[in-house]
Image (cartoon, rainbow, N blue to C red; front, side):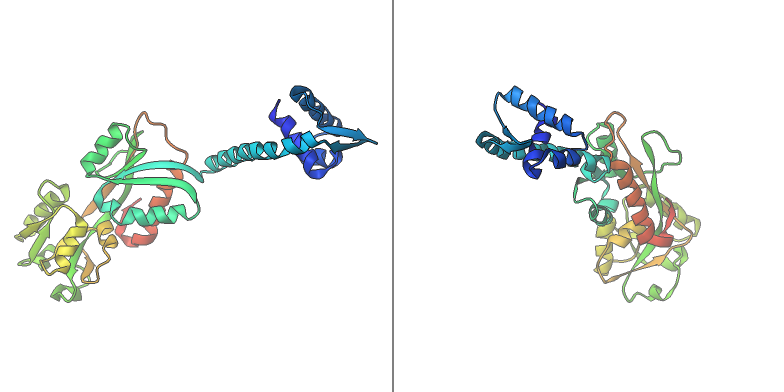
Length: 302
Protein backbone atom coordinates (compact mmCIF):
# COMPACT_ATOMS: atom_id res chain seq x y z
CA UNK A 1 0.00 0.00 0.00
CA UNK A 2 1.54 3.29 -1.15
CA UNK A 3 0.57 6.89 -0.51
CA UNK A 4 0.03 7.47 -4.23
CA UNK A 5 -2.54 4.65 -4.26
CA UNK A 6 -4.39 6.28 -1.35
CA UNK A 7 -4.30 9.64 -3.12
CA UNK A 8 -5.86 8.07 -6.21
CA UNK A 9 -8.53 6.44 -4.06
CA UNK A 10 -9.34 9.72 -2.32
CA UNK A 11 -9.49 11.59 -5.64
CA UNK A 12 -11.95 9.12 -7.14
CA UNK A 13 -14.10 9.22 -4.02
CA UNK A 14 -14.12 13.03 -4.14
CA UNK A 15 -14.71 13.55 -7.85
CA UNK A 16 -16.72 10.38 -8.58
CA UNK A 17 -15.02 9.82 -11.94
CA UNK A 18 -11.61 8.56 -13.02
CA UNK A 19 -11.36 11.39 -15.54
CA UNK A 20 -11.64 14.19 -12.99
CA UNK A 21 -9.52 12.31 -10.46
CA UNK A 22 -6.75 11.90 -13.04
CA UNK A 23 -6.82 15.61 -13.85
CA UNK A 24 -6.51 16.45 -10.17
CA UNK A 25 -3.57 14.06 -9.76
CA UNK A 26 -1.96 15.18 -13.05
CA UNK A 27 -1.69 11.60 -14.30
CA UNK A 28 -3.34 9.58 -17.08
CA UNK A 29 -6.62 7.71 -16.62
CA UNK A 30 -4.96 4.28 -17.09
CA UNK A 31 -2.44 5.21 -14.36
CA UNK A 32 -5.27 6.09 -11.97
CA UNK A 33 -7.11 2.87 -12.77
CA UNK A 34 -3.90 0.88 -12.18
CA UNK A 35 -3.32 2.58 -8.79
CA UNK A 36 -6.84 1.67 -7.68
CA UNK A 37 -6.41 -1.94 -8.80
CA UNK A 38 -3.08 -2.20 -6.96
CA UNK A 39 -4.70 -0.77 -3.82
CA UNK A 40 -7.52 -3.32 -3.94
CA UNK A 41 -4.96 -6.07 -4.40
CA UNK A 42 -2.79 -4.96 -1.48
CA UNK A 43 -5.80 -4.50 0.83
CA UNK A 44 -7.58 -7.62 -0.47
CA UNK A 45 -10.79 -5.60 -0.56
CA UNK A 46 -13.17 -4.78 -3.36
CA UNK A 47 -13.47 -0.99 -3.30
CA UNK A 48 -15.43 -0.31 -6.48
CA UNK A 49 -18.05 -1.99 -8.58
CA UNK A 50 -17.46 -1.48 -12.29
CA UNK A 51 -20.83 -0.65 -13.84
CA UNK A 52 -20.94 0.40 -17.49
CA UNK A 53 -17.45 1.91 -17.32
CA UNK A 54 -18.12 3.75 -14.05
CA UNK A 55 -16.63 3.07 -10.62
CA UNK A 56 -19.26 2.74 -7.89
CA UNK A 57 -17.80 2.79 -4.33
CA UNK A 58 -18.63 -0.23 -2.21
CA UNK A 59 -19.67 -0.06 1.46
CA UNK A 60 -16.10 -1.04 2.36
CA UNK A 61 -14.77 1.88 0.30
CA UNK A 62 -17.02 4.32 2.15
CA UNK A 63 -15.75 3.02 5.50
CA UNK A 64 -12.11 3.12 4.36
CA UNK A 65 -12.48 6.64 2.95
CA UNK A 66 -12.86 8.28 6.39
CA UNK A 67 -9.59 6.77 7.61
CA UNK A 68 -7.78 7.63 4.38
CA UNK A 69 -8.91 11.25 4.73
CA UNK A 70 -7.47 11.47 8.26
CA UNK A 71 -4.21 9.82 7.25
CA UNK A 72 -3.64 11.94 4.15
CA UNK A 73 -4.50 15.08 6.09
CA UNK A 74 -1.46 14.28 8.24
CA UNK A 75 0.68 13.78 5.15
CA UNK A 76 -0.57 17.09 3.72
CA UNK A 77 0.33 18.82 6.97
CA UNK A 78 3.86 17.42 6.82
CA UNK A 79 4.19 18.81 3.29
CA UNK A 80 2.92 22.23 4.41
CA UNK A 81 5.34 22.32 7.35
CA UNK A 82 8.19 21.36 5.02
CA UNK A 83 7.20 24.25 2.72
CA UNK A 84 7.12 26.63 5.70
CA UNK A 85 10.53 25.48 6.89
CA UNK A 86 11.92 25.91 3.38
CA UNK A 87 10.34 29.37 3.12
CA UNK A 88 11.68 30.21 6.62
CA UNK A 89 8.22 30.69 8.12
CA UNK A 90 8.47 27.72 10.50
CA UNK A 91 11.06 26.66 13.05
CA UNK A 92 12.61 27.49 16.43
CA UNK A 93 15.41 29.85 17.44
CA UNK A 94 17.18 29.84 20.80
CA UNK A 95 18.50 33.37 21.39
CA UNK A 96 20.81 34.51 24.20
CA UNK A 97 21.35 38.26 24.62
CA UNK A 98 22.88 40.84 26.95
CA UNK A 99 20.40 42.96 28.96
CA UNK A 100 21.16 46.18 27.05
CA UNK A 101 19.70 44.71 23.88
CA UNK A 102 17.41 42.05 25.39
CA UNK A 103 15.29 44.02 27.87
CA UNK A 104 13.41 46.12 25.33
CA UNK A 105 14.92 46.33 21.86
CA UNK A 106 14.96 42.61 21.00
CA UNK A 107 11.38 41.95 22.20
CA UNK A 108 10.17 44.69 19.83
CA UNK A 109 12.35 43.42 16.97
CA UNK A 110 11.27 39.80 17.55
CA UNK A 111 7.58 40.74 17.74
CA UNK A 112 7.89 42.63 14.47
CA UNK A 113 9.69 39.67 12.87
CA UNK A 114 7.01 37.19 13.95
CA UNK A 115 4.16 39.20 12.44
CA UNK A 116 4.82 37.50 9.10
CA UNK A 117 5.89 34.15 10.58
CA UNK A 118 3.06 32.96 12.86
CA UNK A 119 4.39 29.39 12.91
CA UNK A 120 7.92 30.33 14.08
CA UNK A 121 8.99 30.08 17.72
CA UNK A 122 11.73 32.18 19.36
CA UNK A 123 13.01 31.72 22.92
CA UNK A 124 14.94 34.68 24.37
CA UNK A 125 17.25 34.17 27.35
CA UNK A 126 18.85 37.20 29.07
CA UNK A 127 22.44 36.84 30.30
CA UNK A 128 25.49 39.00 30.84
CA UNK A 129 27.69 39.42 27.76
CA UNK A 130 30.25 37.06 29.27
CA UNK A 131 27.56 34.42 29.87
CA UNK A 132 26.26 34.89 26.32
CA UNK A 133 29.74 34.08 25.01
CA UNK A 134 29.86 31.01 27.27
CA UNK A 135 26.49 29.79 26.00
CA UNK A 136 27.60 30.21 22.40
CA UNK A 137 30.87 28.36 23.03
CA UNK A 138 28.92 25.63 24.84
CA UNK A 139 26.57 25.22 21.83
CA UNK A 140 23.58 26.03 24.09
CA UNK A 141 21.90 28.56 21.79
CA UNK A 142 21.48 29.25 18.09
CA UNK A 143 22.65 32.86 18.26
CA UNK A 144 24.03 35.25 20.87
CA UNK A 145 23.99 39.05 21.05
CA UNK A 146 26.61 40.58 23.34
CA UNK A 147 28.35 43.89 23.99
CA UNK A 148 31.67 42.96 22.43
CA UNK A 149 34.01 44.68 19.98
CA UNK A 150 34.25 42.78 16.69
CA UNK A 151 36.76 44.61 14.50
CA UNK A 152 37.27 41.55 12.32
CA UNK A 153 34.45 39.22 11.29
CA UNK A 154 35.02 35.50 11.70
CA UNK A 155 33.13 32.36 10.74
CA UNK A 156 31.21 32.45 14.01
CA UNK A 157 31.18 36.12 15.02
CA UNK A 158 30.64 39.54 13.51
CA UNK A 159 29.49 43.02 14.42
CA UNK A 160 25.71 43.27 14.56
CA UNK A 161 25.57 47.07 14.90
CA UNK A 162 27.59 49.91 16.42
CA UNK A 163 25.62 52.66 18.12
CA UNK A 164 26.47 56.04 19.58
CA UNK A 165 26.28 56.68 23.28
CA UNK A 166 23.94 59.46 24.36
CA UNK A 167 23.64 61.68 27.41
CA UNK A 168 20.69 60.92 29.69
CA UNK A 169 19.31 63.88 31.68
CA UNK A 170 16.37 64.31 34.07
CA UNK A 171 13.48 66.14 32.39
CA UNK A 172 13.75 69.85 33.16
CA UNK A 173 17.52 69.74 33.74
CA UNK A 174 19.39 72.89 32.73
CA UNK A 175 21.37 70.99 30.06
CA UNK A 176 18.19 69.93 28.23
CA UNK A 177 18.34 73.28 26.43
CA UNK A 178 21.57 72.24 24.66
CA UNK A 179 21.57 70.39 21.35
CA UNK A 180 24.73 68.40 22.16
CA UNK A 181 26.36 67.56 25.50
CA UNK A 182 30.14 67.46 26.07
CA UNK A 183 32.20 66.28 29.06
CA UNK A 184 32.79 69.93 30.01
CA UNK A 185 29.02 70.49 30.24
CA UNK A 186 28.81 67.69 32.83
CA UNK A 187 31.46 69.17 35.16
CA UNK A 188 30.12 69.18 38.71
CA UNK A 189 27.12 66.99 37.91
CA UNK A 190 26.35 63.89 39.92
CA UNK A 191 26.94 60.93 37.62
CA UNK A 192 25.24 57.53 37.50
CA UNK A 193 27.95 55.36 35.97
CA UNK A 194 28.56 51.82 34.83
CA UNK A 195 30.94 49.82 37.09
CA UNK A 196 34.64 49.96 36.25
CA UNK A 197 34.45 46.34 35.13
CA UNK A 198 32.48 47.52 32.11
CA UNK A 199 34.53 48.65 29.09
CA UNK A 200 32.36 51.71 28.42
CA UNK A 201 33.12 53.02 31.92
CA UNK A 202 36.86 52.80 31.29
CA UNK A 203 36.47 54.74 28.03
CA UNK A 204 34.28 57.28 29.81
CA UNK A 205 36.87 57.80 32.57
CA UNK A 206 39.60 58.30 29.97
CA UNK A 207 37.50 60.78 27.98
CA UNK A 208 36.58 62.86 31.03
CA UNK A 209 40.21 62.88 32.20
CA UNK A 210 41.33 64.04 28.73
CA UNK A 211 38.95 67.02 29.05
CA UNK A 212 40.10 67.79 32.58
CA UNK A 213 36.69 66.95 34.06
CA UNK A 214 36.29 64.99 37.28
CA UNK A 215 33.43 62.50 37.08
CA UNK A 216 31.44 62.53 40.32
CA UNK A 217 30.27 58.91 40.08
CA UNK A 218 28.08 58.78 43.16
CA UNK A 219 26.11 55.75 41.93
CA UNK A 220 27.02 52.76 39.80
CA UNK A 221 24.77 50.29 37.99
CA UNK A 222 25.45 47.70 35.29
CA UNK A 223 22.12 47.98 33.45
CA UNK A 224 21.34 50.94 31.20
CA UNK A 225 17.61 50.59 31.91
CA UNK A 226 18.20 50.87 35.65
CA UNK A 227 20.54 53.85 35.12
CA UNK A 228 17.67 55.60 33.34
CA UNK A 229 15.40 54.84 36.29
CA UNK A 230 17.99 56.42 38.62
CA UNK A 231 18.06 59.52 36.43
CA UNK A 232 14.28 59.78 36.29
CA UNK A 233 14.33 59.65 40.09
CA UNK A 234 16.66 62.68 40.09
CA UNK A 235 19.84 60.85 41.08
CA UNK A 236 22.06 62.53 38.48
CA UNK A 237 23.05 62.30 34.80
CA UNK A 238 24.72 59.62 32.70
CA UNK A 239 25.97 58.55 29.27
CA UNK A 240 24.53 55.27 27.98
CA UNK A 241 24.25 53.37 24.70
CA UNK A 242 21.50 54.41 22.28
CA UNK A 243 19.79 51.01 22.39
CA UNK A 244 19.26 51.21 26.16
CA UNK A 245 18.05 54.78 25.69
CA UNK A 246 15.61 53.70 22.95
CA UNK A 247 14.18 51.02 25.20
CA UNK A 248 13.49 53.24 28.17
CA UNK A 249 9.82 54.22 28.18
CA UNK A 250 9.80 56.56 31.17
CA UNK A 251 8.82 60.16 30.46
CA UNK A 252 11.18 61.70 32.99
CA UNK A 253 14.42 61.24 31.01
CA UNK A 254 15.67 63.33 28.09
CA UNK A 255 18.35 61.93 25.76
CA UNK A 256 20.81 64.21 23.98
CA UNK A 257 23.66 63.55 21.51
CA UNK A 258 27.03 63.29 23.25
CA UNK A 259 30.35 64.49 21.83
CA UNK A 260 33.11 63.42 21.36
CA UNK A 261 31.41 60.34 19.99
CA UNK A 262 31.63 57.15 22.02
CA UNK A 263 30.48 53.93 20.41
CA UNK A 264 29.07 50.68 21.78
CA UNK A 265 29.49 47.56 19.65
CA UNK A 266 26.93 44.77 19.73
CA UNK A 267 28.29 41.47 18.45
CA UNK A 268 26.47 38.62 16.76
CA UNK A 269 27.84 35.20 17.77
CA UNK A 270 26.92 31.74 16.50
CA UNK A 271 28.10 28.34 17.82
CA UNK A 272 30.75 26.58 15.79
CA UNK A 273 29.23 23.08 15.83
CA UNK A 274 25.48 23.65 16.22
CA UNK A 275 23.69 23.56 12.82
CA UNK A 276 22.27 26.98 11.92
CA UNK A 277 18.46 26.97 11.59
CA UNK A 278 17.08 28.30 8.30
CA UNK A 279 15.37 31.07 10.31
CA UNK A 280 18.67 32.47 11.57
CA UNK A 281 19.85 34.46 8.53
CA UNK A 282 16.54 36.30 7.89
CA UNK A 283 16.14 36.90 11.65
CA UNK A 284 19.55 38.57 11.96
CA UNK A 285 18.88 40.65 8.85
CA UNK A 286 15.56 41.77 10.33
CA UNK A 287 17.17 42.76 13.64
CA UNK A 288 19.71 44.93 11.78
CA UNK A 289 17.05 46.55 9.62
CA UNK A 290 14.85 47.16 12.66
CA UNK A 291 17.76 48.87 14.47
CA UNK A 292 18.52 51.12 11.50
CA UNK A 293 14.85 52.08 11.15
CA UNK A 294 14.29 52.73 14.86
CA UNK A 295 17.61 54.28 15.93
CA UNK A 296 18.35 56.27 12.78
CA UNK A 297 21.50 58.44 13.11
CA UNK A 298 22.46 56.68 16.35
CA UNK A 299 23.51 53.64 14.30
CA UNK A 300 27.06 54.10 13.02
CA UNK A 301 27.80 50.66 11.58
CA UNK A 302 25.37 47.91 10.65
